[in-house]
Image (cartoon, rainbow, N blue to C red; front, side, top):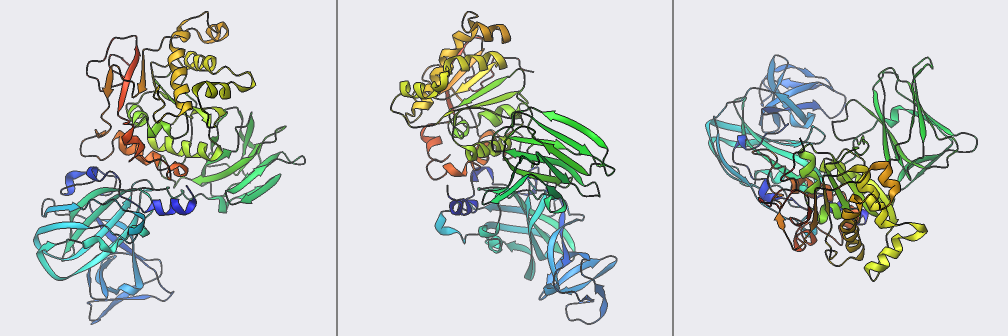
Length: 580
């Protein structure tokens, strides 16, 4: 998908609307504070802002200096009612801006709300659409102000705070269309929590809370590269970002870190995995704190930095390898937002085999998040090489789905062919034996369960068909020590306990991808799968989780092989297996 389309998709839709409805504040456990009140910071000019005793400017009570923070507890006309220190007063709206949250007490159970968030699926033509809330509020006391918050769950920060004055304070309010002040065009992609609170004479009560999701590419987490200095062989900057490759004169890159010790992790994105690279971390006196040579073979590596680190030196001696991107982050980056991949587990509970980068979500649905949420050891194998950008999308998607073990990219040629036989010839180039490689994968990682694509190739794709055939053919061969004796000697023969193929017509099971992981939560396997598929932006023009994933139902699988008997419940890949 072109970047312009990605930008449109960012604000195009609320997905999974049926999961987002909530009735009352208790409908969702969220990391958003249960009781919040707007905090405001001076936002305009350098002059002080006067705090008055009332909205008529009867008496001056003090001043706010630029950067001071106050709590907004109400509004009247052109003024916010605020608490600043021990002072309660009024300040002009033009001088402060709602910026976040501050704690306050609430009135538990004092408001009964029968409210809903309208279900919308937005088209490209409806970019001006806004949140629409419908329903009535019955309060114990007249509400004079309403606060609307949009909390970003991933970044753990307030994205929007809006203060609305109720012109005629009342205990009974119709808040239909209240949130038209929040336009989709101003919201970044990702998981949000929408919170509405009311104020009555400065007392705050929560009225409504609901999860929402905006599809599209997530906003990059802020790094601290601007606080670092770089010396390198050859630095390059193009439309895809900053990159570096060693020169004959200088085969190392030195990153000078902030003196305050704020740097905590450095990430490295490679054009192709380095055979080996060495990272040397030094303190302020130039003494070596650590030195490690890494041979991960990852497309994305991460290096932890201790507080005393002041330099990090990256060496690629003897290699001509391109570093696509390097980022340094401090401790303020939220958990799970910076990819720090681990190797594939030595022994897998589940191996997911995907022909291309996106099929693991489009056609295998919630398989990966379902298993990851169970705490199982999951390995993902991609057969075809769809290009480095598609690899990056795959990493973003898998991380979002909950996987923390770097996937295996077989790197075989991706090209349209007329038959499964032609696909086999394509993947057999350079003396490669795809069937033998599949057997070696199974023997090396010893999966209990394998999930793969349709033997008919979903919509007939020949590489999908070949992948399924290779899986099917590898099951008896992996058990036969006489086949490929070299890998049998290295890893041992292995019998997979269960093999499921998408849409296989026999011994069918149906996975419930809509079942939430926790009560009163919108997060389910299909939620995470759809969120992960949003990262495959290049595929959105042709493929959709609302089209192909439905036409070729990604809930339906058949038990192709079992060593533990037939399924009975027919709704769980891991039935009859003890994987604790």
